[in-house]
Image 1: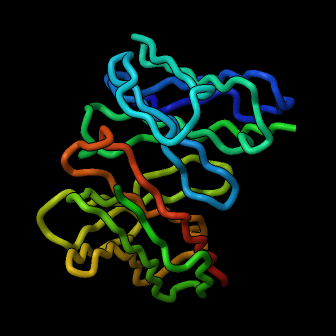
Image 2: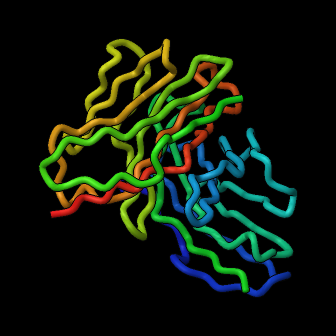
Length: 114
Length: 116
């Protein structure tokens, strides 16, 4: 197992800019989800991809978008950054569509919007 | 819809003492239950999960949790903590029936601080 790798680890952006965060999942993990963890809060579900199609979305606006690629990598894109987007963004992957195996989480990308 | 309440935001405890981190959930459907640990500047690591069967679940690092359906609780326990257990602990649920595609709903976390 290679685990889940996220890049970059830290990022500082200016309000209004766009950002792309990247994730490399474990081989064979067809499902990838992204979570936003604001300071002092639990992670909140942004969206989920299964075999390159979005199949679930939390309460986040359309300026949060994503992609999943056949090589088990994925991206989270955020347009028109706002100060409240400052958070730790976590990528998580699992083998199947269901939740029985639980997710494997990456170490996250710490995004600061100034 | 599901929600998770972690009743204590911070739990200070002395080394080698027992600890219990409390978690209650609310859901209109049957759920799977999870505990994750987050060390500083790291992602989440799965401690244990309840899927079915025995309501007492044993996890890594000596932790265990008990599922109580009538009280909708899933409290995490360890009989003797170490300094290295200092971290933030998150309780989470997901829809057993696959609703919302199995995504996790987290509590706000409990910071466990183990003192020498």
